[in-house]
Image (tube, one colour):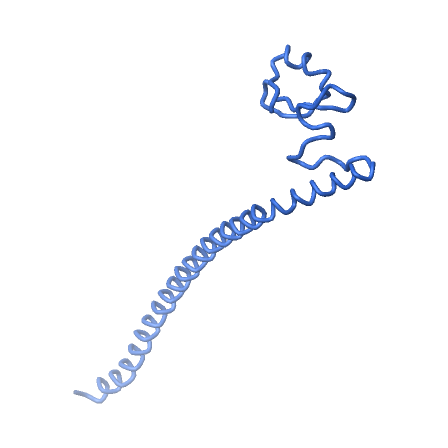
Length: 143
């Protein structure tokens, strides 16, 4: 081997090794970026799934709590109505799900109301003396 060949090899081998190392490093960086993107997408999917589960769980807890408290709330409203009646005070505003003053199906005295279901399915209280009018138009008395 001549001196010129030895010099060329001495210069070319490290240069080729550098080029090969750079190519391997470039491929590694590209692969790492792809793996990181896949990992981030998987983590985001997991977080979204966990949020849906947490929202459902919290909604169930809230519904259970409200269901457990409903008898006490109803009892409180009934007690307030009874106290107002005993003191001769007007009843408070109607509470959703409770009967109006005069009661459902009460007598036809002034202020008595009945609950009716319209043909479209809506339900509301109407004065007892108007029951016949609404019945002729297809409404049905509830209770």
